[in-house]
Length: 175
Image (cartoon, rainbow, N blue to C red; front, side):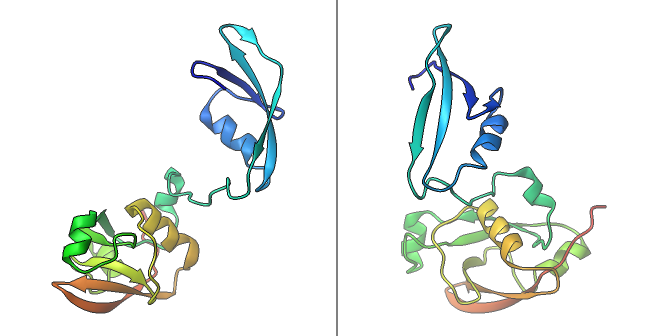
């Protein structure tokens, strides 16, 4: 493939948008193959098979807008700490450290947060440390691994003190 090539097909799926390519790749196994049909400078090239190595398939679905409405929900937004900020708090640079920067307003959302406060830094879940992640990845993990009715313990740093804060897994109906 070269810059400017146009992807026409992936396996048997016509490709018009990135969603079509994602659909075609959905059935390709980890360590699989996909046949691509390309067009270059207006000329269709012979089909080419691309071998995908083990590990090509990632399970990070945090990019999906549908994740934002799936329960359970936790009414916070966070900002990942930069490496220097992690160093200042004696946190490993490769580990998750998410500072709470916004709390969703309303009584229903307040119930989802337990005793979490603004500027708390989430460093683990149920005693487990995680690699660095974004807020969307955190919310996706929360939704994929817990169910409404569960209680999760978030491992938090607040003003340099380590805390374990219980958070109920709730569904917040849209208003």
